[in-house]
Amino acid sequence: DSTNLWQPPSNLLPGNELARTILQEAKISASKFKAVHGRKPSLAVITVGELARYGHSGRRVQLYSNSSNSWFTKTETGEANGFDVTEINLDGGTTTTDTLLSEIYKIRDQVDGIQVMWPFPDTIDTAKVFNAVPLAKDVDGIHFSSWGSSFPPVTPAGAMELMKEHDVLVKGKHVLVVGRSPIVGAPMAHLLREAGAMVTVAHTEVDKVALQSMVGQADVVVTCAGNPGAIQASWLKDGVEVINVGTTFCDKADALLSDVEGDIEAKANRYSPVPGGVGPLSSPMLFHNVAKAAWDQVEDGSSSSTWTQDPATLR
Image (cartoon, rainbow, N blue to C red; front, side, top):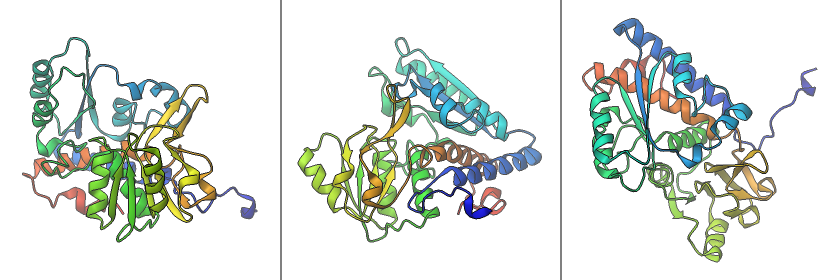
């Protein structure tokens, strides 16, 4: 009896099925690219030092994902979906700006896309490093807010796709973005403004009383702080839409936590779950961008690439 099958609550904004669709489209595009050009679309991922947010990557894959679609296993994800991925891991204590630039110069003409993982150690000149990544290969949008990369950073882009998929309307709405990092919060606010939202940006250094007031006025709250408990669910306006982007793995709970503490369901009209909301979309969006970058570059930068025609563009 189908009436006894479990269904997700109607107030959830799940991302898993959308993530599978996007990754499958990228896989089809990669297969067609190889058939036409005799090679796979390719990505280089360059990391300097140990990123704090990756400290529990193995456990997160074990609990919530698998190696064929995870943000934390890009080589395996690429292999499973028809992409060549080169991961370059440099020592955080000894790598200089010149060393990092040398690695980028060596690899950038051999791949279709480059992802330089942020943040860097304090000794690295971020601006010089970012400027070494060509716009056409900037598949994680490090130039998006400044030079207008055609690829927005993949996590904010995934959040926008989730909102489109579930008809979360932002045009003309008051949207609060909590978080201001150059790879999530800032580009998230930029994308929302482009979509017609009236955007306010806050962060965890804002006075708590002021933050509570801002949260309580917003029609849509997009959390990008990566700080559990930064927002209390009781602050939310009744009927708000909540998009949980920022997440943190908690050792004690052995679980992924959102920035919102408390009973979101009691206040929100709809909200994206943690896990299973925005998180699953980051890796598919990255490989979507790599496929598009590959087609665009072999067609001399034409924006009307085979990717945009067959298969169809993202919904």
